[in-house]
Image (cartoon, one colour):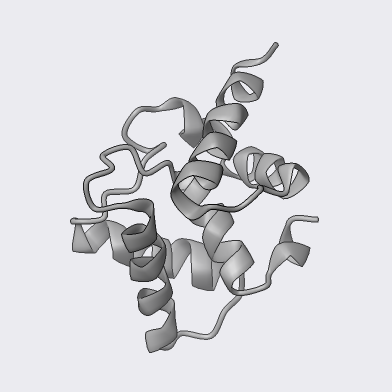
Length: 113
């Protein structure tokens, strides 16, 4: 079993527990693959909800760059909504889970599938 295959069930568990949803495992796997080696590094595998520069990176590189969304206020609002649902006290906000939830939020599954 690859290291990625060991991590995906952790991400799925977070989606079930924190968001109350049954994850689309095909989409979840595709998001994890899309992040490449970043999922294996402790720092890059997580999103810091309290760091404005990190939130800007998610907005610019993922929502605008990867998903092709137009830049507007709704992007940052969606990021904050996902992070709030994930839980302020939750230290390990996995990047894969945040990106998965944002992909679903904006209905951009076709980028991955």
